[in-house]
Structures are given as structure tokens and as C-alpha cells.
Image (cartoon, rainbow, N blue to C red):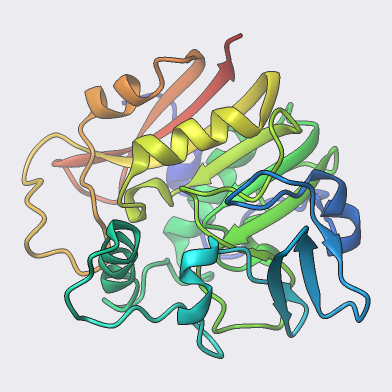
Length: 279
């Protein structure tokens, strides 16, 4: 593990104050958006109640654009994607059903006041201190807390597949089908979200697609060295080994990689990694 780890001595409310990233509005994000199916540029419909790309339509509910692939649109309830537990001939429906199972498994994120979350913010600020420009945070949960690790030089865009909570603006969609045009963003982040994504290779490929040449990837995840069985885990699809992370980043150059003790565990650690898109 890396040493010294000054975050190990943090107490609640001990994170130094820092200017945070600016949360972009839907209007500000529009120039970057595209259909997750056809990659055609999106625009508002005449009523401003949906986004359109030709004949494709994506609803806006309580200010949140629901940018799921067209084949999933009919399964959008008022507050979640609901795929029935039946036999599906369509592989995407079958896949999406599996993805929603873990979402209903229980709380997936650390309490905002938890000291381990404070340590995460401290560590992530060190990792992302030079970040600038647009940044897509995949699996952002709450944008208010999601943007906390990123400096004021960042224009923050949150994306999450869940929309039960509608009081904060973010894009609603899937990491496997990012609703962005190619090579449009300066940074992409997976802040402890990659292990919640069933096809994490596809998610990283999508992150690479939407990044500009030389764009930065920020990745935070737990890495397991022992006791990595999944059958007792309600919310994660993966207990990553380190070689799996580095193998998935074959089209990136690794800039920095810091390993931290995670709580008092000796079977896993926290990995904070920065990489640059090649080509």
C-alpha cells in the first residue's frame, strides 16, 4: 500500500474546504449528446418535453432526460427501468433484466457522513487535482456529492441508470450505451461504479469512445486479493482482481496508480488510477 496515507487520520467534517466542479445543465450538455442507438445528434422537441433524433424520441421526466436504447423505452416506469422476469428472446432485454437485479439488492453507496467516504473524497481530490474541462461521471448517484472530488476547473456531467430521486439534474442512461457523440469529452470517471456494471469491458470501451484523443480516465474501485466470492454480495457484479482492471485498460496509458488500505481489511484494497486515451 502507498505511504504515507494522510487520509487515514481524517475525522468526520475534516476534509479541507475546496472549490468544486461546476454542474452543467441539460442545455449546456446538449451539444455533446447523441442517441444511444444511432449516435445521431439530439435536440429538444417543440414542447421541450423530450429529446429527438429524427424519429427517435427520448422522454424528459422531472427535468431528467431518459436516454436508454429504444428497445428499453417501453419498460420505463415512473421512477425506474423495470424489465419483467420472464423468458426474453431479445438478448438486450435479458441483459437489462440481469442489470436491474443488483440495483434492487440494497444500498449501493456509502453514507455521505461516513468517514470512509471522507477519505475517498480526500484521495480522489489528490488523484483529480489537475483535471480540467468537461467530465462525465458514470454512476454518479448524487451529483452534489459526485462533483465534490473534482476541482473548479471541471464542468461536471453526471450519468446514472437510476432516477427514483429526481431533485438533482443528471442524465439517465446506461454505461454500456453512452448517449454522447464520439470524441467530445475531456474526462470520464468511474468513481466506485465500475463493479456495479455487468459488462464493464463495454463500459470502458464506451468511455474511450466519447473521450477526446488524450482525454483522461479517472477510476476508483476496490481490488480483491482474497475472499472474492460473489455469492454473498447483494449489489456488485464484480470483485475485481488487479489484472482485470489493467487488462480492460489496454487502449489507455496508465499515468498514475495509488493503492490505499480499505478500512481494516486485508483481503482487498482501494485503487485510485488515472489513465490517458491513446490514439
